[in-house]
Length: 207
Image (cartoon, rainbow, N blue to C red; front, top):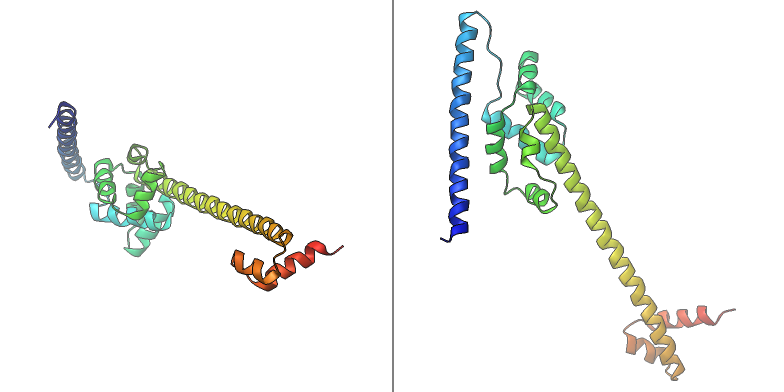
């Protein structure tokens, strides 16, 4: 392992350790909050589980539905309360989002987003869950738009190539006709139908 690879490996290990420390801090904070809520007879805030977030993230990747709509649909499907929707929408499950998005990197849509330079993890995870899902939806939509434009450009290029080929065919046919070849021989030489050649010259010679 060379120096550059060692450096990258050490940075990666530090990032993993940082993530673990943040998880421990977050867990400690959540326990303390829960204890305070219990002590003061206040219901703890609802939180989306990792499984909940997986379902919602994968749904956005498939459908491009906005964050608010996704949470609403999830809540309806799983019989969640309005209080749950409110708490979960405003929560900031950054570490879970990082893990879930990391596990989605093999999805075709994620690969296209990365290829199209529309995927930005930090732009997604540094938000409330509603904001994160909205950012993800926007990035998916932008990537799909780029794919559509790329397909359109390819279609236009093919059409232009076909047009150029037709023009080349016409020029070659005229040159062969000047050499005295019959319509049949021109058609055979160019690999097209005799009637096509005849129609072309008929239109060209008509006043």
